[in-house]
Image (cartoon, rainbow, N blue to C red):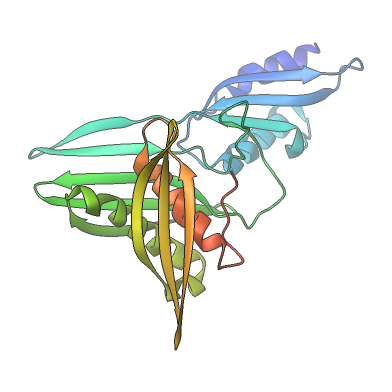
Length: 242
């Protein structure tokens, strides 16, 4: 491998979100693939832009973003925030097309209009639960918020409402939607988040549904994806690839 590429791998790992980098070259010594392992703290597309900037500024290399493959690992972190409260943060591999064989391996695509889940946070205090859902599209990030009780039947509905609240900031036509149901069901050996929404266009009402497989026991994150899946059946702009 050209020594420049070995140095570039080292330099890319200095980007805060990047934990590992590997460049694959062809017989002519030209890069054909760039594999990145990253934290889910930043939108995947922004990670790609940072990689391109470092390559150009430090090595004069113009990397085609289509060569860059990003893997963002999901995780769950619980932090005590005082007064008996606990904050549960469930990051999500944003802007990633899921490879059914490779987990969170992602290839950044050309579709700049995709709306994806960028993060789900729930804060539980006493009998109250507050959900914050972050959505991203084309580098823009918006947050939605909803609040309710800690009842087991209510928490997922709160997450769904927070997802819709965020979506309305990206897609105004989502104002006509409301959450009807939100739940997780067991199908075969898997848990699946399911949501039904009501779109009101007087004098008519249209019911749509969406679903998403629960990964790593992360039901709120899956429910947020299910809401996007449901809205994709009614709105043109939002979509969540699976």
